[in-house]
Structure formats: structure tokens, C-alpha cells
Length: 401
Image (spheres, one colour):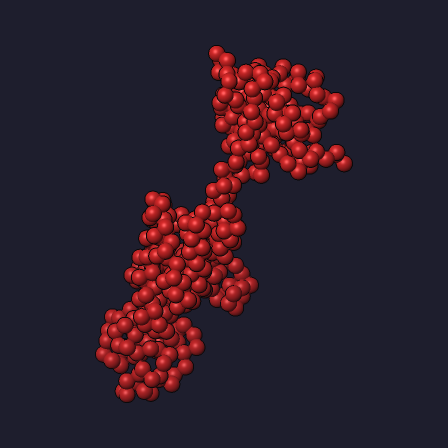
């Protein structure tokens, strides 16, 4: 087992040895990883000669200290070495080396739990170097920690993938950090918005509306005050989506085209995450709901609610509609008895044997229905294309970050 190093110092090596020695004296590390160029390895070598008996050393050499990509890779290698030494604290001093080396080291080590330091001082020589004996060490806060960039990036990815539970978890991590009052207010309301979107994604429309009513406008107000265009864009997009949610709630529990568009959008989100079985199950229901919505929007008749049938159709009111074909057949017969022709419900029934049955076959053999097979993307796309041909489009996608 390797000997543990409580503190490891990653040193960017330049031509001047004094600031590096000052950093060593201030940080008192048990291990040092040098990132040096071909022209500065002698400086690292001199430090090893002077302190090699007391410290563990490892040197990483750059072929080109002006190559940002190479510096980045060496910075990650230095971090890996520190972790191999089981360091409890890792400090990266970016005083020495080229500006590219400093930039590359910061890029490589931000968000990795590393503390940065810089050796400066007010008294400098003609070359701009700090005069010996006037060095001052400054600890630099990792900006990714201060601004929660790792957590925000995790939130952004989770939201864009439709994983609203994970999005809430990342916001909880952000809220656990020290925040300004406006930051705390924004993230608290944004968490409420994320909760609303999860409710909506699970078809809990009323709960989603209530949470959006509480949290959306305050979150947008803060984003506008900050002038954060991306945040404003997303939250304004959710305001437009919220209006579509209101359409569903205005006729809650009714088979409407607004509900159908919402279901189709839900299927698209499942498909985007590779959950083809779930998506196809929603499209299967969408075919039936399309017939129900068409009938309801034109006549006020709800296919499965006997009380909505007019007196001349009461003999049909008690007919069972256990499956898709039976539901389409009943809608067809109701329209025919009412003297309607060419309706969407009738078209769907007419297409069942010639088109729909084949498109839905993979649904029947799916492990989520009556079989053991997974759904292929092609089956999903075929049914999506058919519904699109019939003018049945999903609601606009929710905005992404």
C-alpha cells in the first residue's frame, strides 16, 4: 500500500525558483507534482535536490508549454497522481510557467475539489517578478464551487433529458451552498418549477398547475432582474406551455385534443430517452384518445360515459369497449347513426385493418403488453408518422436550457 500524503501540491514550474520555494514553505505538503516544460525541468530538478529527502516528488513534462490542450491533459495527470497518493488536500499553485500553463491548469482542475494558490507581491523588479523576500501567497477560490457550476451543469443536463427528479436533486445541492438572498430565492422557485414539470410529466396536471402558479413568475422575475437571457428564455417558454396546461384543466377529465397533444408530447419525451416501450404504450392510447376527442369535441359525447349519449343512442351506451378496435368501432357507429361521415373517428376505424393493426403489432408483442419482446425504434416512428398524417401533432416541446 502506498504511503498516504495528507497534502499534495501541484506546482506549475517557470524559470524562477523563489516563488515555488515560497509556496512549498507556506503549504507544507507531503507530496509535490511538478508540471514543467523542457526549459524549466531544471528548476524542478533543483527543488527535488534541495527537498527530496523530506518530500515525495513526481514530474510531468510538457513538450509545448503554449499548447492549452497538452497543459490540460498534464493537469489531469497531476490530479490523478495526487489521488493515487491518497491526498486529503490538493493545492494547485499556478504562479510559475507561461500564461497558457496557468490557464490550462485552472481549466483542468476547477470543479475537482482543488484549492488554487498564487504567489504575488507588490514590490517587483524590472522584469515584473516579485522581489525576493516580498512574496505573498494568496489562496484563490475555485469559481466553479462559488457559483455551483458543477451542480448547475448537472441540473441542466437532467432537465434537458427529462429527468426532473435528478434536476431537483442538483438544485438541492445548489441550495445547500452559501447563496445571496436573490440566488436562494431563484433556486428555491426553480426547484418548485422542476417539481411542477415532474407532476406534469406524470399527468398530474392540477398539481403541476398549482406549483407553476406559485413558482414560475417569481423565478422569472429574478432571472429578468439578473439579465440572464437563457434563464429568461426558458421560463418565458414555460409560460407559453402553462397556457396549454390551462386548456387541459379547463375541461379536466374530458377527452380533448389538448390532452391528446400533451400525451403525444409525453411519448416524444419517453422516446428521446430511449424508452421505446413506454413511448409506444402512449401512442397506442393516443390512437384511441384521438377517436374519443374527435367525437367529444364535435358532439359532446364521451365514448365511455353513458350519461353523455343522447336518447336515440342509448342502446349503444351500455356497450363495452374493452379494446382499441372495439372503441374505434363504437365511435364509428355513433357517427354513422348521427349521420356524420368522413370524421377522424371513422377514418381511424377504417384504417385499423389496413394500417393500424400492423403498426400496433409490436405493441401487442411488447413485454409491457402481451409478449416478451422489446419495442424497436422503427415501430415507434411508423406510428408517429401515421398520426402526423392524420394531423395529430404533439404539443410543442418544453424549453431546454
